[in-house]
Length: 619
Image (cartoon, rainbow, N blue to C red; front, side):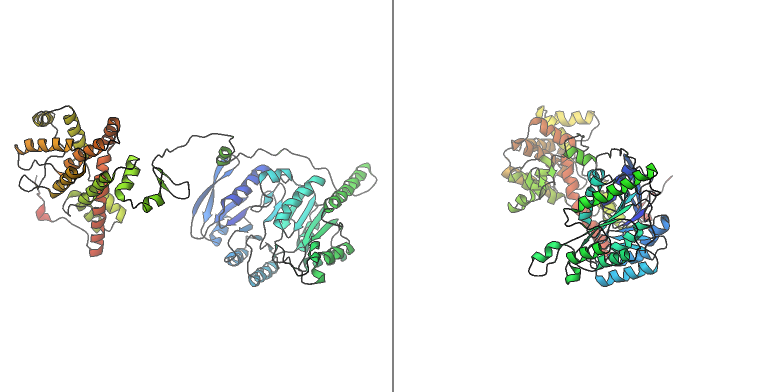
């Protein structure tokens, strides 16, 4: 593996299996470091394409989303890092697919639990093709001031505290991602900071080893010293021991292998990582620490002493640099790092609001439902309560439309209206439109909407107008004669009066059923009785000027609102004005229109064409 630097300030990656937070953290790190271009070139989400909106500083950007690895690599040929957030089930297959792309040089596998046999295949392919695998079970890696993988180094606050927004002189490699974050902080306290840090992952077979990265760090001029944090279990550290013995590493290496406490346990202990399990004396932390020390690494007496060992090693390098400046020695080790002030990362609105730093206006007001708790609530009534009380559709309408629980006779009346108005045969305009649309091969929603669009003043949309005019006339104590003739002078048909088929001798059964229910259950039917007197007058003019279902529902709903005692006069006027009552017809008739759609689909009816003989062709 060896060679040198993996990343730079221009490195770009492809992110597999989109996760919002790690991608945004990468982009925030880019902005913090002063990168000109985002480090995430594209996102791969199998089966979906488009763009994903994210922030690059204060600017909102759209990152392309690709459905396949091959397509993403073709679209972004300069992206040479593949960051794999797939689950352990698919991580190996997607990683191998990425390794086979000529543009990909580094693959980072985040998932834990990748089958060892699959990992071995990935390692073999990567080594044979001069590519690098970081992980599995890794948080990733970072080059300070240049590029980071996913969640490496944690939050922006931690990155700033660890001075990772600019390069230092220390190369760091560890098995643990969590301990890496701790060590970045430690290194920043006692040195000029990290140049590059890698967490190889805690699995038994990591894609790249501790020694792979130490040898690589040794070839990077900007890295003046290395820090290694190993752990008990496995023999990875011994490859570093051999490299040190063979003189392949000519820079100071401070090392510590964690897990010395394992000897305190009487039986074998499995620590957090799959590979953190001692399989014998050679795999113990003590044996590894001793071997590293014997090979020339600087090994402290305990983990607590690791910080002091790093500090002393760095100060020695600084001292050599001062001697170089004085001309006493020919080669110095560390040159001073110029400190920079990182830019302020804009805080996300949601977190700023949560912390009380800003206030922002909402864009939508909702008073009828709330889905923020454990279960949705309708007008403050939990869904479970609605079911447990055995409430019906009328009760749900009373909560969502009127924001209160109406008496049972009111909700029952609503349900009766829905049942009676659900359908009126295939010949009315709404059903006809729906049938024609369904037979044209259109979908359910299109067929339903084509029928609903016919609802208006001439078809089913007269309930509100009937209520409005009946209420105004009754409240002003107009006689039926004054009301009807006054409407006639204005050129307005009386809404709720008249039917194409029904007449004095062929009454609408729906109207009779509604009137019967109201007389038996409503406290008052004042407005209905007024509508009946108007009907008596209009029948004297023509036999088909009967009270129709629109007029019956409109007048009776006025009685429901007024008689329930739960609405003010202003609220009643507003309900009628807004169009609540027509909403009943729209809701009810949707049932029938959906039925007609399904009926035509089930019968496999062909495209409808109106017959010529039913058309009057004229000049």
